[in-house]
Image (cartoon, rainbow, N blue to C red; front, side, top):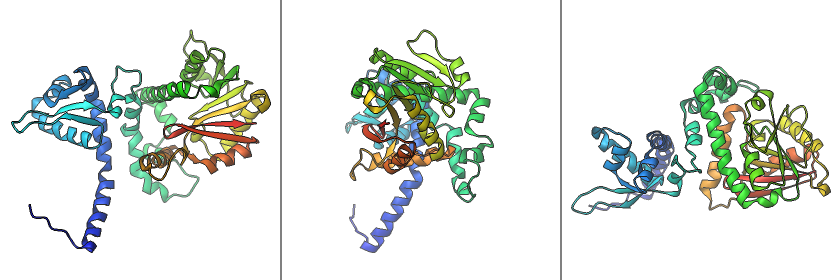
Length: 362
């Protein structure tokens, strides 16, 4: 092979072309991941003892032999991008690659308690993805106008979920999965957050998965879920958690502490200030242990210049949640609404990967 280097000028052009190609083709990474989840490739490898050849994977997922060459190409993308690993390469005499799980694909095994497949399936569903084909058109409209989601589907997110039972279930399963994964880490790594409080009001807590995890790990904390009447009506029975029907924009029942988990990123500043003011009315003074515990993303928190993937994921998710007019805030954005709501201080604990725990004090 002849090695020939282009001129520095042409190399710069080729590098620029590569950059554009890489960005343009990134959606193929997402679709390859979606295929792996839909085909349950992680399950196939896991069920085979943690390593498997291509024919073994194909047999497990009941793939026709004619698609083996295509599966090989899919697995090449999934190994190059780090979703799966290659444990063993073929020798010169032939043979098959032996594929293994990585920490990432281990979170896609359906039989484990840390399975994130439902959340990823929600994120990669066509209903969720299609609004972004309208993003540039949406930018040309004046505010206030419809959300990107409404522009694509003709209805807002909740109307679509209300008419599409399969998508509504997918959304519910995805949210439960995401919450369970994070709450497991919260109770193990950040137990001090719940020390000194005897009651916790989980605002917009849904089915109460987070409250149940907290109640189990910290039996001294009485957990109550506040949500809309139709949500409370469907709440599970036989748990240690109490459920109260109400509206966080109207009032929040009293407790030592209030939990806001993935709630405020759905709302603009004015709505968030209103919710936070109601939280402040519900809790005792700081010297009596009163506080609001927020689980959300703080863009830029816990990152350094070298952690490009961390920062990039935060800003990508911020753009993603814009499709329902949501927003992910940096510290200045949080500081603004916290102080405007009348609180005196806050502390950011960047311990949840791209997300953080924010303690807010009256």
